[in-house]
Length: 234
Image 1 (cartoon, one colour):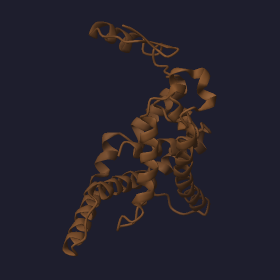
Image 2 (cartoon, rainbow, N blue to C red):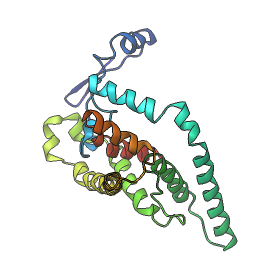
Image 3 (spheres, rainbow, N blue to C red):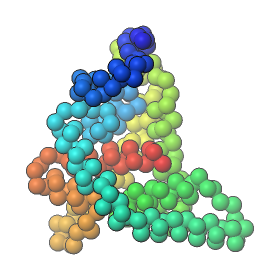
């Protein structure tokens, strides 16, 4: 089925047989895609992995992530951390109930998941134990998700992209920059600690920095876009 969406021609494969043929035998040919303005507005969009072409570097980064961060052994090692964060969430809700205070379940659940991800990568809590700092993160992520979900004329008519008629790039760019700023602070602290001879924590950031030092492959630019993608799914 062919759809003409603005100036873009889109092919919809509705047959399971043809879909299998495309995905299994011609995946490299069809792996390229149009990058939405909402995605391209972030710094280093080429490091997101979800929106770049499936070239050699993409495969290398994907293999690195799957073996170093998302393998079963590492996930098993994080089981205690997951239990700890769940207990902190329950403890907070219990204390709020005992004091008669209202609990914003969405905010504290968001903060708990964010802390779990940040501990996996940075070995720190991004949000304080009382979840008071969760509001800024939630607002930033909500801005990104909201604008990313709006149909944008610039995506259907690329010739109009520079005009940013709906202001998507103008609204979403500051949210990306603020998130990257927060992550950059933590990365710089770790680099300084390593330079001072402090013991490595062995988390994903240390693994990433080691890889960057070993082969100069540019993996250092991956961490911030990866973190943005991670919290966008919270």
